[in-house]
Length: 106
Image 1 (cartoon, rainbow, N blue to C red):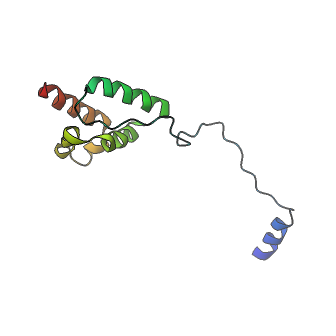
Image 2: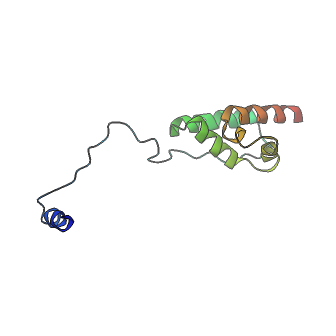
Image 3: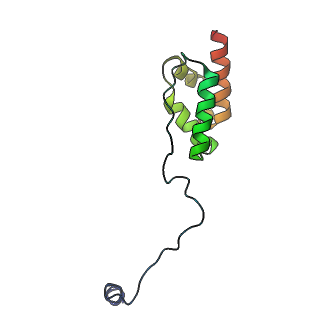
């Protein structure tokens, strides 16, 4: 049975087609990438730029959390030590913790 179907397919008697989707694939490619953040420059400016990049890439809040945590370095990354694992997927909690920590340094 399977051999018969394969013969039919290879002979061109059957074809498989995929319908084109009208829904854009938000994972088809990254439009822009954020640069790393170490806490030495303005958090407000970095956050604004990060939000613009996330909007262009159509990232969900969980995707934004993942990308942001991967971009943190040095003193900015130290905030991750104070967050539980579920908070590391919560973009709002991460950005609030960063804002609080970076404002108290100045």
